[in-house]
Image (tube, rainbow, N blue to C red; front, side, top):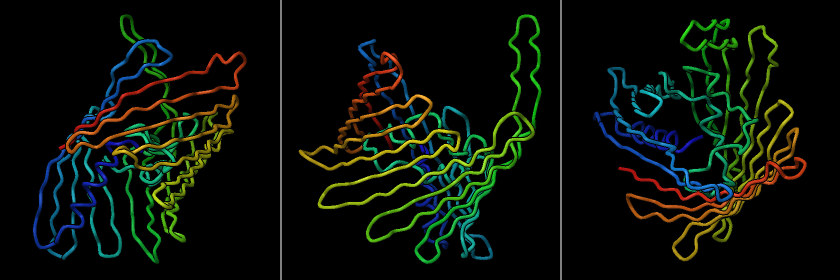
Length: 309
């Protein structure tokens, strides 16, 4: 789950908790960028989030609450419509993420903007394959859960290129993706888990059910995190990390192991500082691959910055 989605979810939670007797509207924005130097190869400047959020909440004639969040990002305009029925929230719109994507952020990562789920690309949270989803969320007996269902994607054959233009690649059909995720607290530890069921229409693609489990616990000023991401495709990744605050900085270290066709180990050291409207961070990530000769090994320094309003 990326930083823009976290900010959008926070904005949505704020408008849905507002009094149903009054309509409220707010606008917020976020820009997150990074400077990266990998193995001394020179700096690359990129941004990970460039977003504006418009939030609105009101109540309908039947007393149900309704909240809308419109997000303008580099990928386009997306809108989430959430209806608080009093017996759970129904989510509609083209900005609804898969249930798993909304909960699988790693508590073992302490970077300012680099924390998502697995570090390797073998794990699929089902969000991209879901398309425009519909969802339902609720909290019962101390367990918060979310269920989403994506839309079917039809199989399309590749279109041959015409002179002077690029061809269109084939589209692999996907049955509606169902994602389920839940969160609860057990003896002071926050435990989350979920699974996405991704079934491809008749093709050579193999159906997969990627899943995750995360555990977060705070003890004596230390934030401990564990995460397991199973791609259900022959690969999985395990993360463990510990973070704390010292000398006015938030610091942490993450260890990860990806069991793939070629195993990969990761070590990430992070430090960040919040300064009101802006925050800054620095990360060092060491990647050690089991490939012969260490051809895939790398060391990367990243300076990150976030400005929000």
